[in-house]
Amino acid sequence: MPFGPGVAGDGDAAAALACELDSGGRGFAHAPGIKRFVSVSAASDSEMEAIDRDCGDVASAVACAPHRGETGMRHSTLALAGAVLLFGSAVASARGDHSVAPDAKDEVIAGRKAAFLMSAGIFGGLKAAIDRGDDVKTLAFPARGLARWAAALPGMFPAGSTSDASEALPVIWSDRAGFEARAAAYAEAAAKLADLAKAGDKAGFAAQWAVVGGTCGACHDTYRKPK
Image (cartoon, rainbow, N blue to C red; front, side):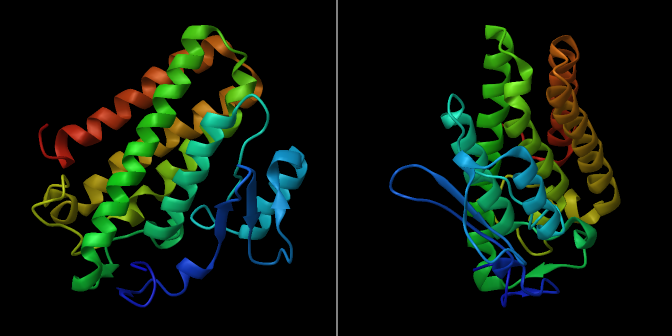
């Protein structure tokens, strides 16, 4: 597991949380301080918020699994949360002082690519929901998942996690402060999107979706290899 013994400075992040789907497609969350598994398809919002509080930070917090009518979106969010856990470090320590062991970097890169792909799927799903005219309150869960992914993103780029197979440019590490500033702008925009979903502000949510896309693109323009 890349973020664990193979990564300098990361501690025990990989053991902080486990999420999984059972054979019936239900989601379960387990977090430090919670001595049980919670079927989130039956959990209330207040119970999920309690799980969040017990998890303690963005990288180890989770609210996962489908509610009726949102199965596809929630499955994507669940998978993304797992990728964030596995390949991200806690936001409070997501700086350039982390490094990846040479024999683990391929796993980090592969997981990072998967997480980006899943985030794109969530973001596209939000746009499809906007175009359908859905009640944006039903999008609060995937929007919140996207916001957490955005906040944990810098921790997915520890020093040494690059190769010819990676789309990440070396400037991510040579200009770490600039990279983290762009990532912070993306996280702030995504957090606002989640707030607008929770408030049920359909017009505001649609406008903010474009803002999030702009902050995402601004980071890609500088820090990702051209497509």
